[in-house]
Length: 383
Length: 252
Image (cartoon, rainbow over all chains, first blue to last red; front, side, top):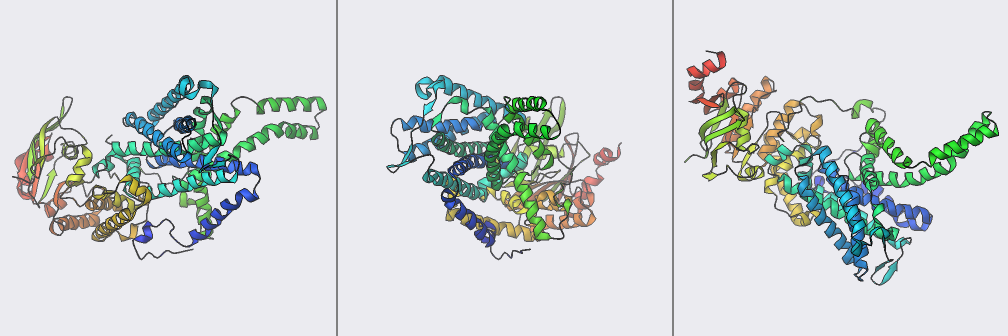
């Protein structure tokens, strides 16, 4: 076990508490840098989605994880970023400009959404953000002069400094990775400065935050704006990755997927946002695989245990019908969320912390270490 | 002119007069205690001062400035910090970040500077940390710097809440039942700290308290309240002998 001896206030400010971090993050970065050359193009494409989802996850983590304001409207912010890119691209605006414009515009919209949200908490805020998402979806479908309605918009290949950057090439992957890393670093900077602490203060007790001089309304709006702006930036990349966008891509289900990212990643940490994104992006091909192969596996099992060919065929078609049923994906997501909330409320990152502690303390780890003690002195909140 | 003044302060919830035209003044550098039976309106007065409730009528002055209509978050900026009867700490944060939130009113950096963590932000953070460490030393909290609040015992939390209020470098501090839930020894520590706050840090203290030992030990003056009205005002012994106060506590 490592003991940290702190000799300077700097020790509590720096991002990497000890040299071990340089090694582990160095290896991770090295792997991510050589990934396009060693992994199949399919996996690299999945990694791009991981980067985009993780960026959104970091944005949502700021709002939900650190400021405590739930949102089911982040698909709309993603859409605004994506459509800004597609629209500005028609006028030959260079990538860096419309990339920033996408973030900025989404940030402004986020702040505007933040204002009505000041008076709402909990489930009511969720409903308000869902309504906002529906409004945006509807506007995108109806405002045909700008968005081409339900026909959708084609997004041309990204060009950066005169070079074409195809969405399947390594350069685009590096671009997404860079955006993710910069977002994470910016967020970490925010969290170790007064604004980040004010966010956490609002999450834990608005009354106390106010009495310590935190302008709660202002900081909630700031949190909404930052979260939305980050999601907008991710939206620009999302548009380029898919090269075609239409309103029905940015539905409630996408917002729920973002919630899954931070819930399953968990532990109110940025690690969680990244782990959750990996989980979500990688579970999709797994579900497709199940859909294709599960009927065969189960009918095969049935045949092994003595079912005749007619019964096996019936089993095959029944299982295939279930596996390709509409909305099955949503149901599976639902089950995953419920299971995580019940059995691992701290998410994947929480589990990782437990495993790490197990080895650090070996053989003295106690299972009760992470059991939350019930505390009954919760005060009545002067909301 | 007094340092801090409440004039005819009233707070009505419908027909219930929680605070009924209460007037009092606090002199600079004194420790003033508010006592009274349960429901007398003591905490309501605090909530009026820190603007959690707007007063039904009346005015509040601090350093000759009318602060009745200031927004709640500005009160801390003026130099009035408070603690809560039932502890309102940021549970899922470490003690250090709790105390650093107390420094919020002194932070001057802008959002974009913080995103880049410019040298000005870094310097600010170190300055805040130095101030926080002074408070940690003052209140003997060295052992808990990186501990999460949710894992700390009640007595320690009570002290941390006081520490957070002190981190904002207040001129006037409002202590809402500083000794509730503390054992005899911890209460004794608390009484030393309250007196040190006055003598070493020069902070004016306004406190609500039930424990008469603590009140007698630290207060310069005492106000007794019942049903939202002032019963008596004066030195601790005077107030305790006042017939109305005796009647309020023991029944006529």
